Image (cartoon, rainbow over all chains, first blue to last red; front, top):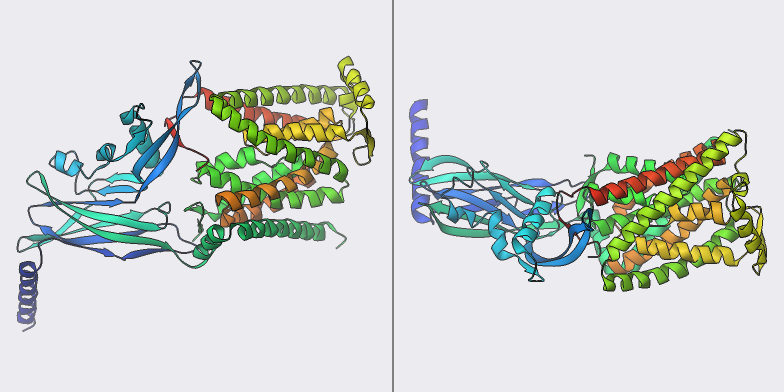
Length: 254
Length: 313
């Protein structure tokens, strides 16, 4: 009897699944949690990105931040042997975060289409001024810098697949949110690669925001910078005086 | 659990690491009368704090450490307030001028080259002279008390210098330093150190301490206390200005550093009290030479990455 009930339940669930595949679009993506909150003891977190793609496709997930203008110092040799800053360069439209998650190595991934989502593709997006600079070199070094801080990453073999139901398969990937990802709105893209082509990209937003003490402090520092500065100095002086009093207590006659 | 988020730096840090860093730098500050920015700022950058936030939050921390250290030295009678204030006035004038000088240098290009070379040569020169001089002092008179004897024992040039000093107007008695010199001296030297500090982007403790020892002829222990007293005011000014104009003071970071450094400064003062003037000087000279070597290494070793974020943005 128990067996029959179990069988019936499975068939029902399978039917439901089929119905959903038939009704909804064949691609979807959900992010859990939908927003990341930064509180006083925050040290980075992760979000789960999952959804459905066609069974014969591959999923590439990309997290990117807003493009920003950045001023960099270029290092070079002076007098043949001394390394120091030899000039300033400005990058525009450089995303503050760029993380790519793939089911296997991106070089295997049907070559060019998936690469359009990956880090080397940034060279087309970022502009470098002055224009006389060697763009490939500057962007290459900039990518190295971002990789060092784990803000630009390629995470191969991280997208996992689940059951295939009626031509659709489940994918999921755990996306790391490093503590260096500041408050802001980030874009999560799901790229579908099919038969060597990037057939579809769907996007959702991920909000990262300060709450509680960090939020209040940030508000004070940017909203009332003079009050913030004076407060910082007074607290520092008070801490120094307090320590002085405590230590005199210790060294005294008691 | 042991991490805290820094809202201005935009990163999280391990509480214990920062506390320890603060402690070590506070200790150095209590012993030698330096702010320790030369050590703290690069270490903070290394653990992922943006350069501008590292420098500004460190000056906030130095306010606490130098308050703690000044108080401890005050009790030992090591703070020459009059001298400190005159140096401070000079420092403010020099600092303001230095900012203009650096603008001109930058406009001319090659500013970094000039700054780096001056810095290395000066640290190397001052460090070597101090090391050699205090070594002689230690060899000749193992029993010598922490004072100016070694400076006075220097060659003929010194006496010409001493004669020159006596010719200057407005001679004033500086009781704690045990000397009578013109008030122009601390003003002028304070201004020079202020210019250099602004150009090099450092607090100037490293330059101020040798200036007080060799040019103002102050006893080493009074130098340490007076230097801390002067640094306190400089860093109050820097902290407020940085917070106001650049929003670069991370209060959480400064608080964590403070917890360590104010304790470190108290221990530093106790350690310094047990050392003789020449011993203190030779240790500080070693530290200065170490910084010099570190800077040279930075200039000679090929960097891994050939671009860096600009400090001012």
